[in-house]
Image 1 (tube, rainbow, N blue to C red):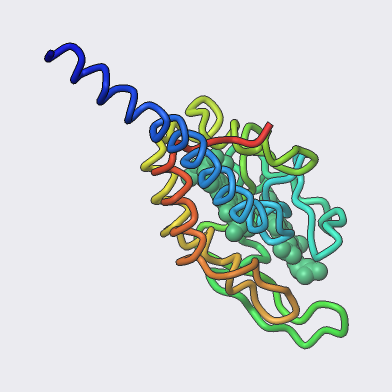
Image 2 (spheres, protein in one colour):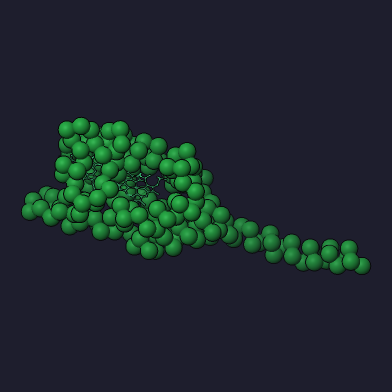
Length: 187
Ligand code: HEC
Ligand code: HEC
């Protein structure tokens, strides 16, 4: 009797569970697709380039002058990022350039965190990989995306630049959903 009951319950629950699993994964993939609009926006990609030097602007053209990140991302001797990038965005009265972007932590993302030229699936797997994400757990990755103020610069990029889509708060909520539903990655 007890065995039958257990079987009946298992049979009753099985279809529900079978439906629940893909739907969590679908939610996770949907959340990551939304996050992708931020991750693959020029504001983020310009500083997560494929080469050793950043790119700039909406078209993500080579940074002028070339400004290699160097050993620690803060530039090479004689040409540190901080020579031009201040602690905050600095308005300039140029025709082409309306402001020089700025943040106290301004530096180039290291090569293992390069996102340009990669698919969203590749970026996703790289983000989750502690060997390539700065040794971060998923929770630490979430904190960085939701609260780091250099990431936050993407939504206050200074005059003459289009902010990343949405807001850092929305980005943080999407990342929360993505992680809580299994941090699924597109192919
Ligand atoms: C001025 C350059 C710069 C900009 C702009 C920038 N990043 Fe980064 N990013 C970095 C640097 C440098 C690191 C490495 C620092 C560290 O690991 O703490 C990094 C690391 C990260 C990491 C953690 C490591 C990983 O997995 O890649 C995430 C996530 C991230 N950035 C997200 C973003 C997002 C989202 C944006 C746009 C809204 C953005 N970044 C814009 C420079 C930048
Ligand atoms: C000689 C001055 C100078 C140096 C040195 C310099 N930059 Fe820049 N950078 C600028 C100026 C000016 C702009 C704005 C250009 C524009 O908006 O078209 C800029 C724009 C950028 C952008 C584009 C922002 C965006 O989303 O459009 C990134 C990323 C960037 N710099 C990263 C760096 C990093 C990282 C370093 C150090 C490794 C660095 N820069 C060194 C002057 C400099």
